[in-house]
Length: 159
Image (tube, one colour):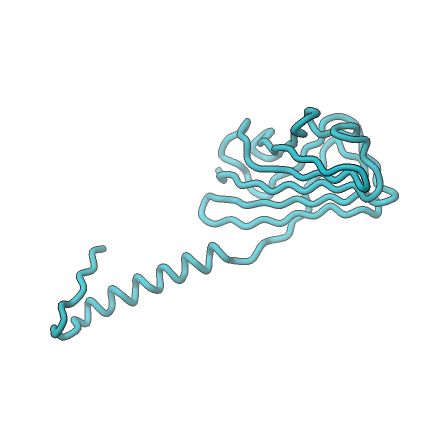
């Protein structure tokens, strides 16, 4: 749509006014969609143990084909950590796999703050790599224990 502004002194064409109104409403709708609410979901923690009295939550927002996702794990005193490389389910199927899609923060409570990257493992799951130690698991990048935390923040394209 091409919108031509009236010249000073010209009467305002009703079609021009309607075109401007339509454009403003369209931009407002797009802005509201981008700033929309996040949807809660519970990620499946593959190769993890049992969350017990810890916390495992996720939330995401999809705008068009772009999905923004956050996963938060806080270990409790009865959390167990399983065996093998951990992965987490995605709330919306991804278009492709084997893509770097975001970052991860890992807290070794009282000891260290660590960082890493998240990668799409499949079109329905992601895993994390510690920046120094390899694939995140019960013993990488630390031996996980009570009050340790894992926070992933990713963006990917939906199928």
